[in-house]
Length: 510
Image (cartoon, rainbow, N blue to C red; front, side):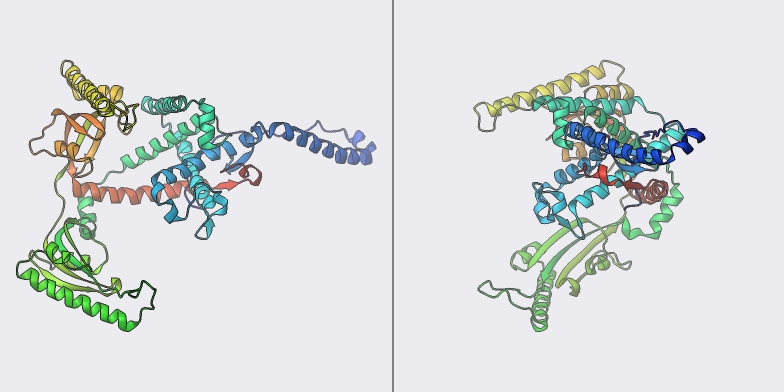
């Protein structure tokens, strides 16, 4: 089990006993009492079985049976399912196009599908328990430190619950029915909201801790100097020529590759690389040279990053200078490279802080091949643009401050990632956002207080430029340091919150 996991739901254990018999009664009825205990136990078992028969179908047992304990906290199967299904469904949604390649069939029982030396059920359960351990630990620390539940967190919770209500209604279900389809029949709106609230608080506490990690410029510089390859970029162009031997014959049949065949293929690749290198030196372009060889591919890279390969070790060599070129053998990957180095650099440009309000067009109810589809889409886009323009004018006619813009963002933006923090994105780096958004932010003449409207595939963005922030290389170094320190802290804290499974309750998980 992972060293890190999440959550705590303080349910008190209550145990009761019958009043003690007097010593005299106990002595007088010793043998009779022994028999009564035996038969009394049997009677209780039959009563419990009878109750189970009644309430099993109503899901009371799955909802209340303890499935996991973390310390002295108990979690029901329904609560564990919140984390299990979240983990599972998030994975499926993110990797939907690759599930078959990963060996996961979403239509089949996870317990019947292997993933390495475990089943897919075991994998998702381990991830869910890890999450539970973390949530438990963070909620405990938040309570102990007086970390407050804020209006912003409440707004996030309310927004999520409203989204649940809307989604259920759109599909014609009650909230409980909709949750049942997503998390299993044991899930209720109450359980969902409780666990969502705990998760939001845990995430906020972790973010607060990560934000508290501060590093001086000297620390950032020292860390950069210790490993510049991790942060620098290189600009270069290259041709890769494959030297892998054919694994099939002319008829498409598999053949066994011999050492002689491998050597011959690599020799042919070297000959081709040398020829291309000479042609390139004579003025031909690498892209044209690669186009003429089915075993070759050309690359022109402006922001190459380091990895421990033949190509990047050559590119990041401290002696490398502009204009260097070479033919490189990469025996481990059965190929040769023709490469030309342009320059190596650190990304010193300043990141930016920006606020925005996203106005998304309403979704059309027409199918793409319906008559009037294009006109309806265009009309809804025009309406969204008009709303964006009106909101910007509303802001300009008011206080026209950053704070008033932030308030407008919280009230109107469709961007769930920023509509509870005033539409703010900090330390935005080049290429992080979609092109039009990025170009507006990094316009050479951009200054604090600038506003505008930008159109992207997401809709219309009302922009507010806050200002510049740290150089990007410092942002990267700080991220590395903070990630290491945060993970060390998290592992240390969560080590005291190990999840233990309870066999009976776990039957209802998944």
